[in-house]
Length: 117
Ligand SMILES: [Zn+2]
Image (cartoon, rainbow, N blue to C red; front, side):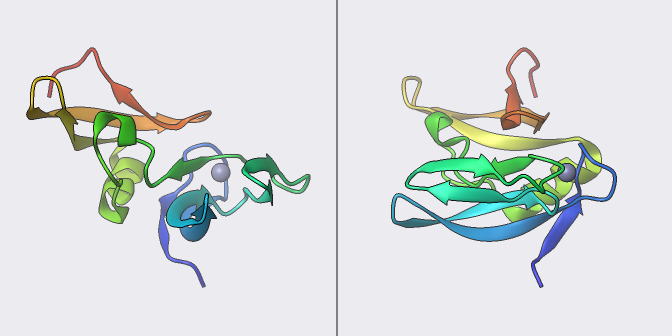
């Protein structure tokens, strides 16, 4: 039984669960809708034909903004309140800053850049 973090924002009966996957040999958490399953072929993932939803968030999805991992509690809050505040880090300015992230059907999450926290 997988750990459930909340309700999928994009389908009727889906729940977002924690899955352990491997990406390029390294373990990674995937937060995925219970109605979404993938075939993995080398590093390419394709939704199975019986999947009715494709919503997923990769744990390391905000890595390019220097957030190593999105935590389970952050996902819980995001699913419950439609947004969650995350701490990012600017390597240029050498300082941390905060932004809201929201669910994104295609990309999992997206950062709300034009709104200050
Ligand atoms: Zn779903």
